[in-house]
Amino acid sequence: MTSILTIILIVGLILSFVILSMFIWGAKQGQFDDSQKMMGGLLFDSQDDLNDTINREKNIEKRKKDKKKVNRESD
Image 1 (cartoon, rainbow, N blue to C red):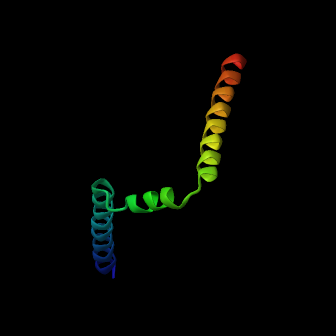
Image 2: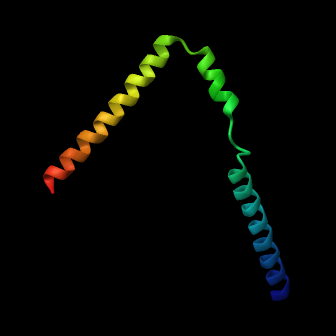
Protein backbone atom coordinates (compact mmCIF):
# COMPACT_ATOMS: atom_id res chain seq x y z
CA MET A 1 0.00 0.00 0.00
CA THR A 2 2.78 2.41 0.90
CA SER A 3 4.71 1.64 -2.28
CA ILE A 4 1.66 2.45 -4.42
CA LEU A 5 1.24 5.81 -2.68
CA THR A 6 4.93 6.55 -3.19
CA ILE A 7 4.71 5.76 -6.91
CA ILE A 8 1.57 7.88 -7.30
CA LEU A 9 3.25 10.76 -5.45
CA ILE A 10 6.38 10.58 -7.61
CA VAL A 11 4.37 10.36 -10.85
CA GLY A 12 2.19 13.26 -9.74
CA LEU A 13 5.20 15.43 -8.92
CA ILE A 14 6.89 14.63 -12.23
CA LEU A 15 3.71 15.34 -14.16
CA SER A 16 3.19 18.62 -12.29
CA PHE A 17 6.77 19.67 -13.01
CA VAL A 18 6.35 18.89 -16.71
CA ILE A 19 3.11 20.87 -16.94
CA LEU A 20 4.63 23.83 -15.06
CA SER A 21 7.68 23.74 -17.33
CA MET A 22 5.45 23.76 -20.42
CA PHE A 23 3.49 26.72 -19.07
CA ILE A 24 6.64 28.70 -18.29
CA TRP A 25 8.07 27.90 -21.73
CA GLY A 26 4.84 29.03 -23.39
CA ALA A 27 4.76 32.27 -21.42
CA LYS A 28 8.37 33.06 -22.33
CA GLN A 29 7.75 32.30 -26.01
CA GLY A 30 4.75 34.63 -26.14
CA GLN A 31 2.14 31.92 -26.68
CA PHE A 32 -0.36 33.80 -24.51
CA ASP A 33 0.13 37.22 -26.12
CA ASP A 34 -2.85 38.47 -28.08
CA SER A 35 -1.60 41.40 -30.13
CA GLN A 36 -4.54 41.23 -32.54
CA LYS A 37 -6.99 41.90 -29.73
CA MET A 38 -5.19 45.10 -28.81
CA MET A 39 -5.04 46.26 -32.42
CA GLY A 40 -8.70 45.48 -32.96
CA GLY A 41 -9.56 47.52 -29.89
CA LEU A 42 -7.71 50.49 -31.30
CA LEU A 43 -9.52 50.23 -34.59
CA PHE A 44 -13.00 50.14 -33.11
CA ASP A 45 -12.63 52.65 -30.27
CA SER A 46 -13.88 56.15 -30.86
CA GLN A 47 -11.72 59.22 -30.32
CA ASP A 48 -13.67 60.08 -27.16
CA ASP A 49 -13.06 56.63 -25.68
CA LEU A 50 -9.34 56.93 -26.31
CA ASN A 51 -9.20 60.42 -24.77
CA ASP A 52 -11.10 59.18 -21.71
CA THR A 53 -8.59 56.37 -21.30
CA ILE A 54 -5.65 58.76 -21.57
CA ASN A 55 -7.20 61.08 -18.98
CA ARG A 56 -7.86 58.14 -16.68
CA GLU A 57 -4.21 57.04 -16.96
CA LYS A 58 -3.02 60.57 -16.19
CA ASN A 59 -5.26 60.73 -13.12
CA ILE A 60 -3.90 57.40 -11.87
CA GLU A 61 -0.31 58.61 -12.30
CA LYS A 62 -1.14 61.87 -10.51
CA ARG A 63 -2.68 60.00 -7.57
CA LYS A 64 0.39 57.77 -7.33
CA LYS A 65 2.70 60.80 -7.26
CA ASP A 66 0.51 62.52 -4.66
CA LYS A 67 0.49 59.40 -2.52
CA LYS A 68 4.29 59.12 -2.69
CA LYS A 69 4.58 62.82 -1.78
CA VAL A 70 2.31 62.36 1.25
CA ASN A 71 4.29 59.28 2.32
CA ARG A 72 7.58 61.21 2.09
CA GLU A 73 6.19 64.08 4.15
CA SER A 74 4.91 61.75 6.86
CA ASP A 75 8.30 60.01 7.19
